[in-house]
Length: 266
Image (cartoon, rainbow, N blue to C red; front, side, top):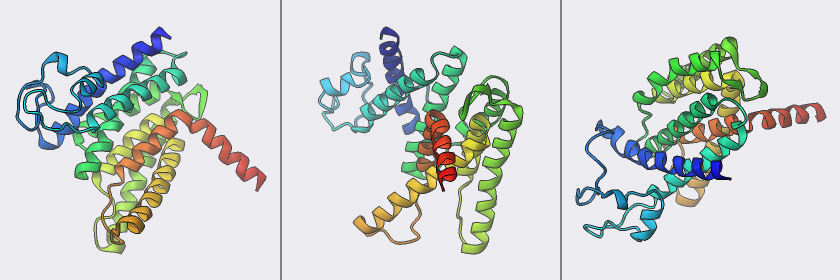
């Protein structure tokens, strides 16, 4: 229990840093300096006002200096990262600490991608470009196969996953532009899926794509019906793909076996 609480606190602390990344990366600002400050008045945030989740509650969601309202997103991201770290510990804690740390970094990267793409419809190269070679190296060398936890992913599955993720989405982008006469897939999505494929293998690419497409379709149609959004309106795909990647990482094996049982029953 102490370990789970410690990981939760660690995840919340990293979640506070993710808020900085989500705000600054799209603007090309340093994520190291200056220290955190209010986005309304620019006042530096004291360390006792920067305690993840708790400080927001103590301050009742307002800046101590100017009393402007702080976004509820800050504690939500801290809580989300903390909870996902705990889930990762529960799923992979019995294995190598190095594997668990890699998955922590992967989860946090996906959270940053989710919110930046949601806000700005971009996926930062600063995450995906170094992430691609690292994903292939780590996937080839030490990471387990999410769809068969007793086996390593291995170089073959990792490289095929990298090629399948990046290649299939590149093909969709080229064909979509040729058919629709407009950009159908952003370059950020292509690079992100190459990274996901390197870490999760080709099965992870398939499940991530399926889950992302399913969630995107359901939510997209819901927005059209409920909010009158026009058909063909540009919707960022990254948030749905990140959700699909999380499902693939944590429950890929179960979902894959469920699918096989469905096919067998049919």
